[in-house]
Each structure stands twice: as C-alpha cells, then as structure tokens.
Length: 167
Image (cartoon, rainbow, N blue to C red; front, side, top):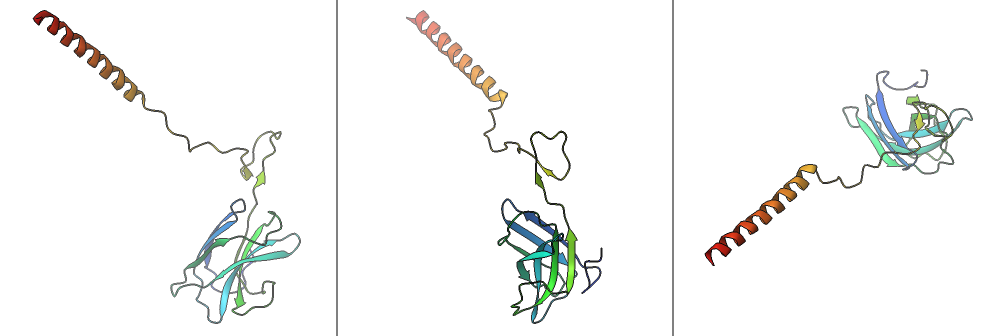
C-alpha cells in the first residue's frame, strides 16, 4: 500500500496492540538483520502526521524477530498507523526516518455508546462476559449426596430394626 520503501518486499509482520493494557506484541519475518542500525516501531496519527516511538529490535539471521513491551508516551488512543523504520543505533532524532520497512493502517476500537443502535465489528463491546465465577456443582453430585443420605438413613433404620428384634 505504498508504506514500505526499504528492505525485502515479502517481509511480513503481525502486531497486537492493547491501549487499555498499554502493551504491544510484534512478530516479524523476512527482515534482514541490521548492523549499527535497529528496527524501530512507531505508532502514528496519519491525519496530523505525528508519531511516537514504542520500541526497537533487531532480527535473527533467519529474518525473524519481534518486540514485546509497554506503550508509553501516548497522549490519546486515536493512532491509526503502525510503521517499522530503520534507524541509526545511536539516534538522537525523535522523528522516524524515511526508511520504512513494514507498515500498516488499523482502525482503533471506539468505546461503544450504550444508546447506539446496532454494533459495528470494530466497536469495543460495552461489557465482556463474566468468565471468572465458580462453576455451580454439577447436578449429578447433588443426586449422589441425596442418594447417599437415603442409603445411610435406610441402613441405620435396618440396623435399629435388627437390634430391636435381638433384644
């Protein structure tokens, strides 16, 4: 889509971003290892041409690599572009270089308005299901407990009956 201008054209990557948890996990393949340079991950707001560096990494000899870290320095959650640039190892410039390796646009999730009708596929749900509660005891366990109690009462009655006959 015209974002990449450096490196292997078949390089690929996947990123998982959580603004709520302030985390990023990035995996790449097909990027050549660098010397005296690093791959730097940027989040950008394409509409106003501003970006924040979120971390740097290098790749292994087989072209695989990645970055996992915390998102910091974000002033909002309306970033819509993740781009990986090639930067000098000792880079004092706070802006990304023009050497872009991999990049991609994404749609940030918006908080769902409770009054809105319908729901779009890229909208954050108003509430998530509660999956941490204790599961109720299976019905079979309560049946076994009742059967055991009846067996015990029946056994005690039989024992008392036999004792009375012997006495």
